[in-house]
Length: 184
Image 1: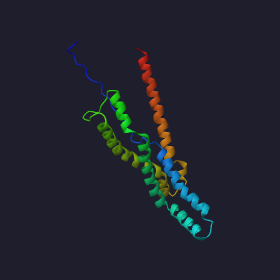
Image 2: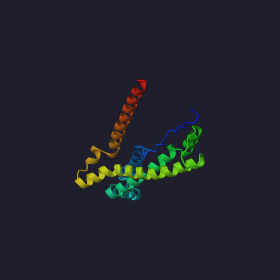
Image 3: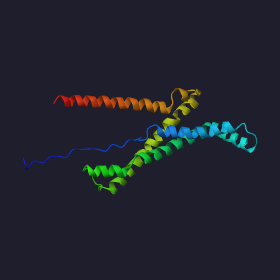
Image 4: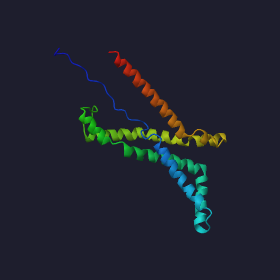
């Protein structure tokens, strides 16, 4: 028995492609609606303020300007929200306390830097995907000519439905695994 070697358990550290969820879309939509709301409020005022407000209102009614701005704001808020909520240094510290490590990377600050590097690469794909999902209803509405389409099924609603379905599947799988353990 003393001469037998046991292999270590293979583990992985999951990093989500979209760790921010739908929060960046909600933030970006709030920012995009605010100037239009102010422009509508001040549009009736005469003089310079009224003309500036009307110009801003016309600018935000341009679908190209609105779509591109919305897309880039979603990307910006995806990075911002992930930077606020995801702390590679804390995860690196917890990983080190539990005796875990990433092969080829020294524990501590090197692990945190590596996780930050990987997260930024994965997050770019997630942010582009989230931005595309956010503007997709407007694009489809522009192509089909049915502008009400963006209100019928928006990108945020689609993401919420998919995340609820995925979470339900995860919960079902967890329950099935618990039943397997109960048989022992």
